[in-house]
Length: 221
Image (cartoon, rainbow, N blue to C red; front, side, top):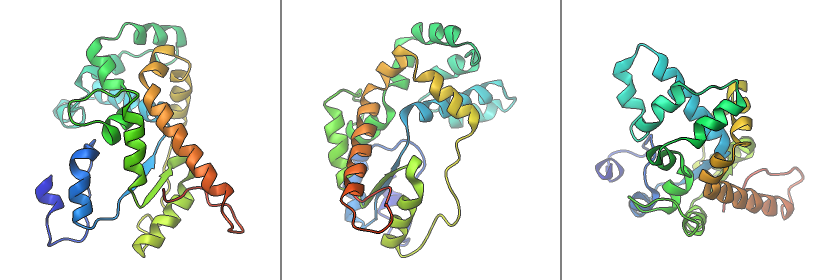
């Protein structure tokens, strides 16, 4: 990863996955990269991950499972057998998850932005994550994507997204709503929910202070 970041022969890079911010941020900053974060509702993010794992677990593409489930192997069986249309059964399934599965679900956004490698998300990591977000050039949410795209285009000097917008399928929204009603899931996403709420509040404050004739729905923090 560091070899890619420190490659002086390229002007942009794309890194996919859950890379630890604390580890790579100094190198990205020294290399002069523009850093942006587009956050997502924690329940929606978990819903999409579980649905993807469920589909992958039932597919015949066994050779792809290791490639796309790294770090989430423990959730594959849970997701594959998850009774999506039965709220009570789904609640019971989550109440009986293993410690390893709990750790795999636990506040991934806080883990990436606030924890050091090997740490488990705790309340103390939320302000660290907020401080790290404050060092970025643009921060927004998927729910308010348009203005985020506009701000990023202004900094980059180009609209890299074109006409693309984030897509949330009805099945994901439905599962996210179901997950939000399960106490054990709300507890496991506690720190991500707090982090996401603080970011939303910060954006709202920025909007309230905006003098633009039309509301800007995101801001650089």
